[in-house]
Length: 168
Ligand code: ADP
Image 1 (cartoon, rainbow, N blue to C red):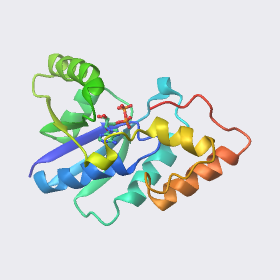
Image 2: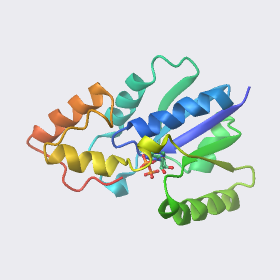
Image 3: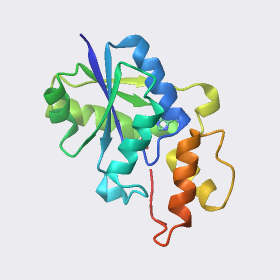
Image 4: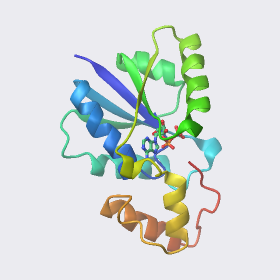
């Protein structure tokens, strides 16, 4: 039984994230999408909301589970008995940070392997922050996120406490 963790902020989940989840299901017996609390990134959606949005997006995938986590990723890896972490590489610009992260995680836990996956070209430019920016400016995000995420963005951004600082 090979388990992999796909960690991230998922604020909110996009079709790019989901493309990677699908690919991972072909390689691993079990995929855990680990939604990080990421308080320092001032997320637009709460941890519970982000977990709920991912869960609804993957409910047709029986080998995928979604959980929030709030500890060191390498400790989470051990707790779950996972063999690796998946991260996405969209462009060269992602590389430097991701490389640093992978080496640091391995320093903290020698067992921690990181696997990089690239999405379908259509999603290579997609990020949660771009989606939030388009939604804030009332653009159409239908091509970038599932319908329930589009609706959640609309509700959140029309509410009284519109998060203007959310990044990721
Ligand atoms: P984090 O705060 O950990 O960067 P994100 O939710 O922004 O969380 O991203 C989680 C992971 O998913 C990262 O490895 C990121 O590079 C990857 N990712 C984000 N958007 C895409 C996309 N469109 N295609 C492929 N990978 C992506």
